[in-house]
Length: 126
Image (cartoon, rainbow, N blue to C red; front, side):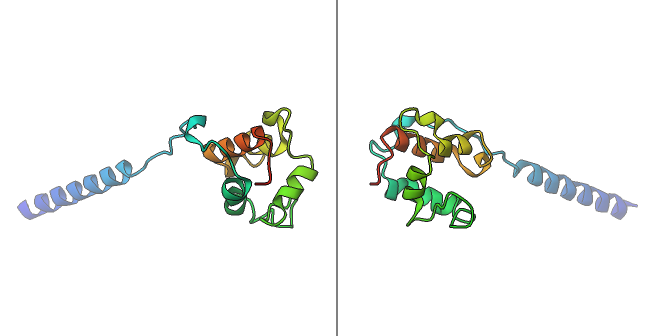
């Protein structure tokens, strides 16, 4: 009888510890607003924007699906394809599609901040 009670206690305690660990290890990703002051003063297409496209977009947008965002062709395709609006950067197609459009799930807040600031600075090929 005592062995059965001891066995149940150990089993119950073990399960309780397991589920406590399991539940405490779950963490939701907190979306923190990006402070524009945390970004570099000058956004470079080659240094800041191309890596975003290369890491997040090129799996599909590497020549197969427009726009081609491969490192060699991204700038030309964005500027000649009407994806950039330097007059109203927030209305640029490349920005709206990653903010509220079908590609929003693939871009982080920091990606969006970099792209918007790059467009605000004139979308230079630098």
